[in-house]
Image 1 (cartoon, helix red, strand yellow):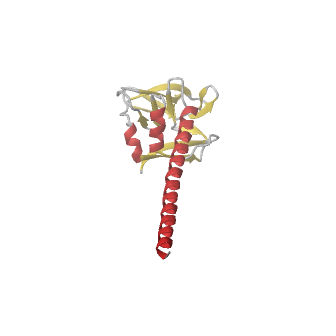
Image 2 (cartoon, one colour):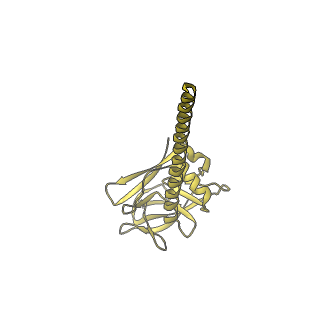
Image 3 (cartoon, helix red, strand yellow):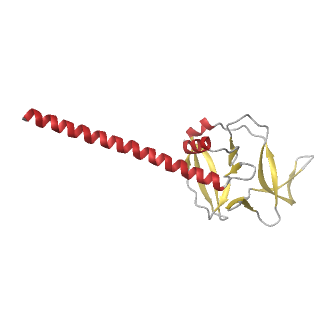
Length: 183
């Protein structure tokens, strides 16, 4: 009788431990899937007609939070997006390309300096606002929206697992800036 009681206690304890571990693993998978879906939502909201996403500076009215690079990698692996720009980082997992086009704002009325041959004009990172038919850009008065071709080495998807994307509120304007940082 005592032997059966000890066996029953061990069986109950083992079942309880297995249930707790299974619940923890299931909870982690659910959390990961929710986080990947959240990041996919960001990518879909800011997807341009040229099939890229620029999350360098987004509207302060948009609800965005920090996210792990692993979730960004998983979202990109499931989506057909050419590349994602976060600040000066270009995330790309296809053949190497020479340039990455993206939108910037230039004030041709204000020369910042001259490199000896060319005038360098005042530049501004436009605020991206998701709309029902794409992305619109907010730029200050006097600035013109212009497509800029930037030469950059792409960050491969695998490298994202060691990074996280941080969201910072810009105090001087109603926007958020996003940056990629190493963990």
